[in-house]
Structures are given as structure tokens and as C-alpha cells.
Length: 345
Image (cartoon, rainbow, N blue to C red; front, top):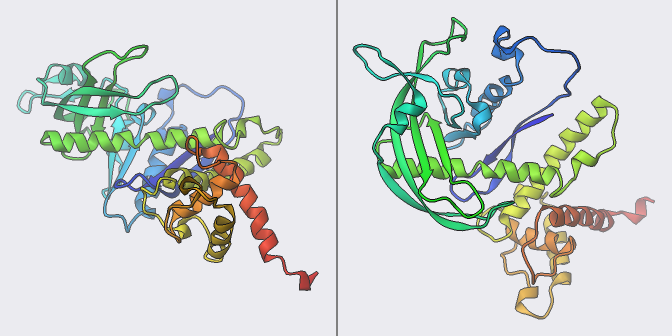
């Protein structure tokens, strides 16, 4: 099992690096009922751990927002979040909430947000994904501050309530051959207008990066699930190594169009730059589409070279993770040859 947390630039979508990675092997035996175990005894503790590590490791960031899907909708996740990190979590639990300050009336989260009038609408472009065509769509937006109550079976030392904001997003029409989008997002970010609600939605949409990352680990790049390794400890070490290598592949894929503004040094060593430039000169053809259009020293420049080494011809489609992985392997062989000191043989 692998739980990974990636850091990405909220401004340009560039992948910065691996913030946290927990690799473990599930052992046999029946676990105790979940209500008889604390969060620390459950695998769900990994969500709290990765959030804390992100807060510790990204102290120079202008702001930190940890974005996660429904599996991380854990009361302790909100109650114990580090003060320097915001959360955006897609809600899974229809939790009890306080709706009246005087009488402390108790309602349910989903029925509360469903009863509110819409606060506005957003027009968005939804990119293509496996089993889904790209489309333009209209989303109805509702948002409200909410006060979650401690779960009935929650630990007594948990705070009785946690104050958050709920942003509810619903697609106004049903797409052909698919389901309409409906996201209930719990966040620690304040939301008082439609612009702030849009920002929360945009940040949550960046969660797709982690899906691309696991696709890279699996059939899209490294095919880790096909590894024939029977020793659990060896498999854990292998998975950890692939988790790191997949980040470099993701960085190259994301930077291939020159939109992230990242430098070559975010993936490669300084000594690699002259080799990459020399390989680029050899790979360039006569036509404009066969030339490296990106500035030297940029990660986009390196991505063009690695993609060509991986088999991309520069004409059709865009190089994906498998092409970048093959290209990186080819580059490592070239680098070894370029730095081989025959005098030492």
C-alpha cells in the first residue's frame, strides 16, 4: 500500500515534489471493529500525518492547502489540522451540525446545504478523462459556514464542534454517457462570495494531479502492479523508489508545454544541463516542429529532449508518462557514457 502527498504550485499547476510517502504491507488477521479503535490505530491516520508533514516541510510557501477526496473526511482531520495549513476535503459523511446558536438545534449537513438558495453559477471547462469527453458546463454554487458536531462515537477528548465552510457545486445538466458533477467541499478557507467559492473549486480540481501520479505509477508509466516480487520488504523498498522516480516523470509531463515556468534544475543536476543541450542539438530536425522551442535552462526544454529520447516524434499528440519514463532511462545511459572516464579503466 502507498499513500503519497505531492506538492504542486497553485498558480501554474507545476509539480514541486513529494511531500510525504507512506509505504506498508497489510498483514493477515481480522482487525477489531473500527469503533473500538482510535484513529491512531487505523490506516486513516495517514491523512493526519501527511497534513502535518506538509505543514512542517512547506514553511516557505505563501500558503498551504491540503486537498483530498472523500476518504479523508475524518473529524480528527479537521480538529487537529496544523494552524498553518488549510484543508479542502470532499465530504463523505452526512454529519450532524449546529444550526441555531440559541437553541442549539441539530441538523444534518447535506440537508442543510441542499435547503439553501443558490449563491451563483460558474461556467467551467471540464477536461477529458478516461471514460469522459471534454465539455463546457454550468455549475450551481451554494456556500455556507457550518459547525460540525463531534461524532456520537468520537473520542471524548475531541473538541465538541469544529467550524468550517461548505461549498456545494452541482452541474446543471446531465452529460451524455456520464453523471453530472456534484461536489460537497468542506474547507477551512473563508468563503463569503462567489469569487472565493470559485477559488476553492479551482484548488480542489488540482486534486486530479494525484490521480495522474498513481496512473504514472501503474499502467501509465512504471506498471508497478506487474512487479513479480514476493518478499514484502523488498516490494516496499521498490515501491518507495518508484514513488520518487514517478515524481520526476510527472514534473516533465506537466512542464512539456512551458506553462509551469520551472527550471531544469528542479529535476536534473547542474552537470546534466550541457549534456541535455548537446542531445537537443543532435535531435533537432529541419522543420520548426522538429526544433526545441523552449529556452535553455527551462524544464520545458529538458522535457522536449526527454520526450524525443522516449520515442516522441514532435508531431503527433503530446508525450505522456510512459514516453517520459523511457526517455529518462535513455538519458541516464547517455549521461553514463558522457561522463565515463576511460583513463580510469
